[in-house]
Image (cartoon, rainbow, N blue to C red; front, side, top):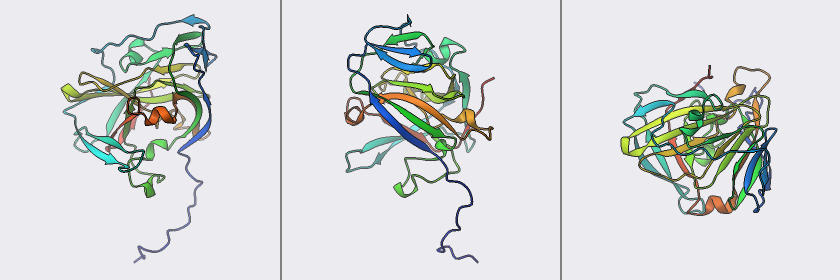
Length: 279
């Protein structure tokens, strides 16, 4: 019998890439418009190209695969530190079956983004954008980024897991997502209706050249829109020449992340998830 305390064998594969943080730049405080110039997020005091309105909220709209009878509990994370927070732990009650996300092209219909409180900004378009404490950064997501969890023991936080669990957040600062690569960016999204104990789940596939704008989000019993980007590199799966995806993301700076009024709120569901390609 093998000694369970023995040193594990040396890995025979290359190291697995999860996420790499790249250079970050401050968004100018004078910004009034987010503009899409050739797939690049550009911040200006006056509009460039075709100004469009932010997509209006539609509380009655639902897209994705629904799960009903959802329950949740709270778990204290990093308690006693400056990064302490309450993690919402969902239970979708799937009886052991995987949780499925419906794949949707973001550009295929306005309702695909509106159903999760988002706006698609195409090349040559711009939307109003005026927020303090924003930064624009480069992030590289590996194909296994979804198989790593920040909600387990810190000694295992960089361990490759066998489960790609649900990981969602919302926060009262905006996000802007785009692919800086040759393949689409995939953002996992949800519309949670706490008063009805249901949640709708989908993957929004964003073409290179398009921007996905997410305004600030807060909790509501009627509906709460959430998102996660650990599955950003889903479009790389099935290709032996693509192991990662280069993206750009606009988000809040450290002060915005720490402020009680704007900080992120995190949600997990531990059941393995299924993600497929849109038709």
